[in-house]
Length: 138
Image 1 (cartoon, helix red, strand yellow):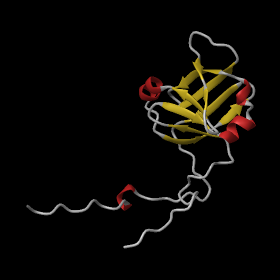
Image 2 (cartoon, rainbow, N blue to C red; image 1 turned 90 degrees about the horizontal axis):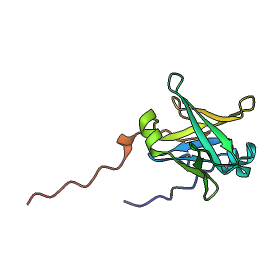
Image 3 (spheres, rainbow, N blue to C red; image 1 turned 120 degrees about the vertical axis):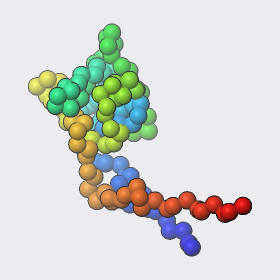
Image 4 (cartoon, rainbow, N blue to C red; image 1 turned 90 degrees about the vertical axis):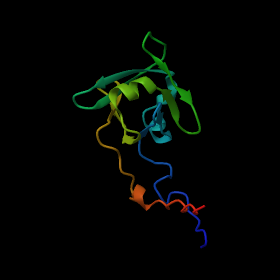
């Protein structure tokens, strides 16, 4: 058996040019495209708002901290917001979501019911993973 090179972007891992937010088990990551499009870098803090019925999240960008504000940390192209308890409480699935800016309300918003699909993203099943080697009988 020989190995095959997996090129960058082959499975949807390339950086998106569209504003996106990625949710992990403990954080939100706002991508570089969203940072530029919505001028997020001029703010240091966010407040989190949730609409449980519509399954939507809103982030209010702030210049100064408040009692409920969370500090954003700059990373390698993305901004990180630690929100482990909120993610767990709201049962937000890990994944990448489309991010928009509601200018009338001054909020970043995303619908956490439907994950974003990247253009050219490969669809692959967990079952397609290489099975483990069988154990030898003793």
